[in-house]
Amino acid sequence: MYELTVEGDFSAAHNLREYEGECERLHGHNWRVEVRLAAEELDELGMVMDFREIRGLLGDVLDDLDHQYLNEVPPFDRLNPTTENLCRHIAQQLQDRLPCRVSIRRVSCWESDRCSASYVP
Image 1: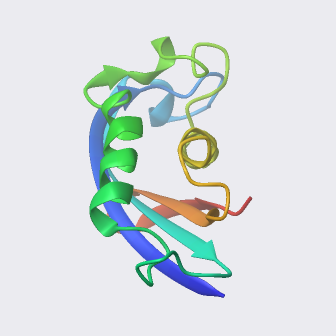
Image 2: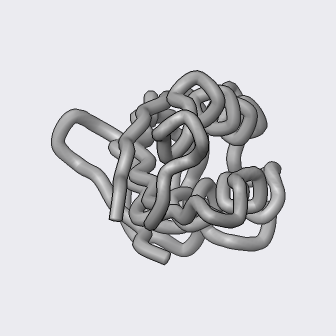
C-alpha cells in the first residue's frame, strides 16, 4: 500500500447549534486540512497521484467553504458544522473527484494549533 499526504487551508465562520457554551455564538477559524490518500498500485508514472493534481482537487473542495458562513452552506444548513462533520464532508467531496484506484485514508481538520478532528472512511 502506498500513501501520500497533502495539506490545504480555508477560513470560515460558523456557530454550533444547540451547543451550551461560547461556540454557540458566531465565530471563525482558519482551518488547516490534512488529507492522506492510498493506493495499492502506482500509476504509469510511478505515483499514487500527482501532488499538483491532488492539491488542485482539494483546493476546489475547500474553495466552496472558504470565507463562508458554514451554517448556510449545504449540507451544514441542516447538519451541525462541527469539525468532525467538516472532515467527513471534505472526504466525501474529494473522494468523488479521485481516480477509482485511489482512496482516502484519513481527513484531519485543525481548527486551531492544538485542536483537530479526523475522519477515517
